[in-house]
Image (tube, rainbow, N blue to C red; front, side, top):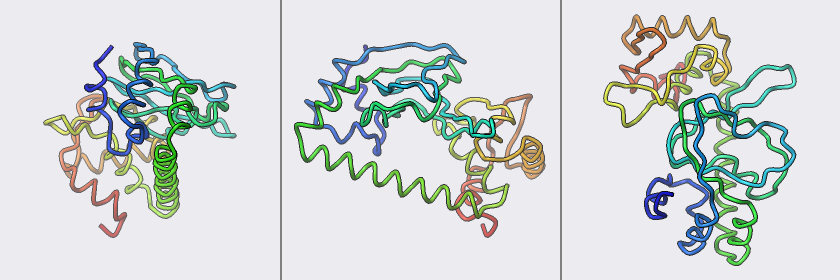
Length: 232
């Protein structure tokens, strides 16, 4: 298993685990189990009755999705190394609200719910920190929902692509090469609209395509469009 200090270094600033003290986090990691997954493996299934663990992604990329009442797949997010997945289960052990799938070979630590609850229950400061982080996420999600209602198709696809850019890539590559159907499910657009927008952006030099491989050539354009919509 990776050393605890190496794992902590991977954690994003908004990772829920950063609310734990070093001894609490060390104890949680000692009780974790490492698992490796092949591309396409389903790790968590929406509707599973008991969520008794969360995932700390060590490497690879995971897709978080759900199926709507009409049977349409909605992609909620893609997660990279250092991100925590399925954290709602750390708090209520209830049914899973989404499906988690490995889109490339991935490794993760399974963090047991009972150990997490034991850790935060002994520290009012930790409980307060967890509550603040969860409140911040609710605010952010509300902003995403509101902007999705008001933004047109271009900004919505731009936002999806911005979230997929691999910041460590030198040529504007994405974390993985999604299909147009996946991009549509992520942005809330039909595949035909995704194809049209990508073709327009390719002509403008905003993106480049080689087969299914897509690279962002003008990330600033997409970031402005994603943030300010058609007024950018």
